[in-house]
Length: 402
Image 1: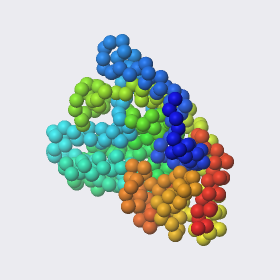
Image 2: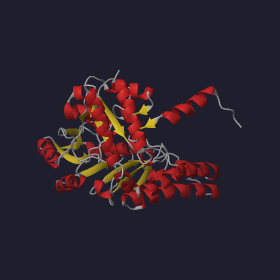
Image 3: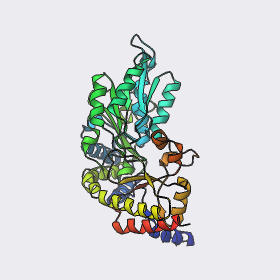
Image 4: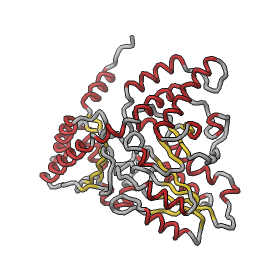
């Protein structure tokens, strides 16, 4: 037995005292997921590409994950590519259509074009910027102040692009990772398809939290296991039947050559369990809306009493578990640090943008830098209780009083 160190004991005390309100950054792995990963690590450690018995046992976990993801997303297993996470899935979705030089070169129909909103996840924004450097015409769509990318705004972007490029792909997330605003994917899909383009939907924050109609009409769809209480390092890209993906990295024939590299059977075992649980996730998350609303009420009271009444960011329809508030007189990252000392874990933006000095690009596009610089995101999950939130509000109030 390995003895515990003073640091281990301190970490355990800190964890027990922490109220975790950052479920959009990552979710705590479910006990059933942990058990599945542990068991697979013991009995299915072989290479899934090997044809012997141990390899076939490992391969079974890979295919179980594929089938569970397909069931969650409402697609056929053959149309699911397992990836290293949501970021890789988004990159493949955006880059594959322009990976062939013959496809990305100008033609009689014009320069190939990509249409992207300003409030996407960094994995989409950076991929779009890279494509622009390669000569793809990228048209950027600004959100409304409510955080919604309207079909009308996308239609206008198509018209603006018409003299310059032929839009082949539109990228729009289902639920914004910072504000929780739900985008009108169904209406956008109809408009995009009527113009002959494909629609990629980043459903990382929607899968397991909203019903499947939140991404209905998508041609390509990305999710990540760790957002649905699964392990990190595994995700998936699903496609509409008939779409031919092209690899953007090269190697072996894993995932039909679209995502070469040895799959992790243990991670896949956890992903399978998480995806199966996530099918009932929307009902669990619907129960969180009154808790989220109660927390907002308590925080508004605390702020008003101390002359710093918060302003809600994102007035569009929201997922039931997300709140994003700006706090006059505070910088978002400073407030998050102060709350961390009180044992409340929240964030001031996307975890994938952490460590940068710039305010949230999402909120900057919506409401400007000043509002963005004072923003804090709270995201709760199925283990969050009312008692947790009331205690978090009290700790928040103590911070505001300093």
